Length: 135
Image (cartoon, rainbow, N blue to C red; front, side, top):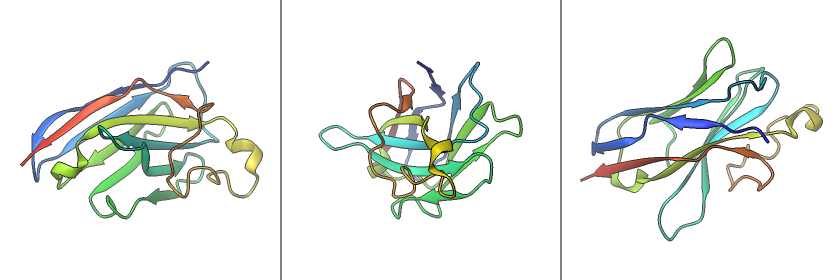
């Protein structure tokens, strides 16, 4: 089982910024769909952003579009989520995930992540990092 590792969470005031990182040591995800998800207390997990690592196509939920940016480093070893103009509603535990089935989807490698639902139990997940935005 691949273990992803998030970092970069913390507490910021509304309007501030944070950059989350996700490392996947020893795993080649150069042809996968990867995403960032979040879960607030009492709420279901939701996708916020996804990226196809080989082509760079990105997807964003309406709630974060224009404020968050998903990216990867050029060696495909680290995934990032730049979060700007943070709002109290962004408070949640943030998880990165990789879809191990991406290479099987053919022309739509982000078929499972593009609609930014909750991800799948069999995906590769990190342990999560807490983001708290104070008003």
